[in-house]
Image (cartoon, rainbow, N blue to C red; front, side):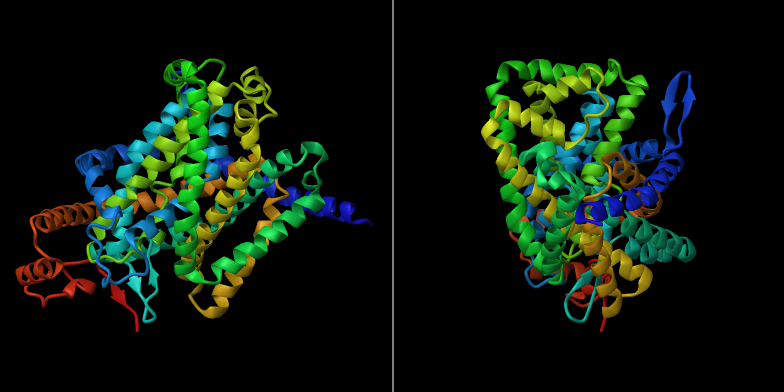
Length: 527
């Protein structure tokens, strides 16, 4: 049996195992029913309603405190001696590396393919609402984090659900939600944070190197690509969060700037077509042409793809943000609000406008009803039509985006894995071996099979997490009020030491008590 036949056999067997499972998961999670001819999907409404409630409850924090968030991320209120591993900026870029990437490039194209241009409008709305949800979960991530004896940090929904709900007299519910959240994040890590990234970056590499005639079009080339990427990912993730933070703080901004610049060039080159493109997005949001499910069909697709792109409410981002150096949890909650804005409102919108104004042949064919065209090929075709010279740079950007997402999600998955299976060295190495091995499989699976699986685990994670966010919302509001008062006093000229002493005196605790009691986050110091 030659090598190609062996590779094809492996691919067929993997597809035979995964595809039926993906179909079953999709049918269960995205159960829907018709009301008056409109399709209702409860799991999508779960995210929509959460974003609305948190936006109102926190007084539209995503609008009122956006300027403050920018000050924090620039380092104006940094606390270098506070517990944690990374700065506010590094925490943001680490979290962004898990969101900015193929969800923006391929995800927008998938949204337009299935829900039409109008789906982009609902993606933007989801991003704006998601800012409030992200603020809540990342504030809690810092408040209930664990600082280990070696200075490393563990945080995320598995901690704030368990510890936060125990404080509110619901220890049993907290344990169930924490375990369920961790399990879903591990599952999404392997499929969305891993396999999807490999699959779509390989698709772009194949297109760039000859399409159907490319070496990477065959399963042998796909497996080789997966092996190389697996080794590179393994080299980085062995270094832990500090290593990941250093890589992403350099990689993500440069790649994002390059990609956004290319979008701007296409948009400016076709500036006369931009008003019509924006009108198409808005018009088809409420009156989509040729889209199954009409308005609600476009809305559902838009929210699905936005949730995959910005991950608000999923519980993944608090894992990265909890590693920040701060004594006041809501400072990082404010920083985290910037994620959905940058990811969905800015980058996804620019991708959508680029695809529409470029009007590449694949986009036009998909609009005409060719269901075989999906994913990153539509975005790549738009750039090829408008900027033929950019295709090589786009391929590089796609691969690097995929790489940064892989290493960030490996960290998310590891922290969740440790909650389920323990944090021993052996357990950690088993997880990392599985993660790197899964990279190879991602090169062999069909796109829509991966989309069904990743969406299923993503939305299931949101079910566990958002229940806890509702119950812990008063804690978040307390932290928001506290940090706004802190910022007011800092801008009035008071020092950190003076504010710490004043806060400690107000609750009868020694100055600096923020590491294990009020005022400050609920940090557990493990010896």
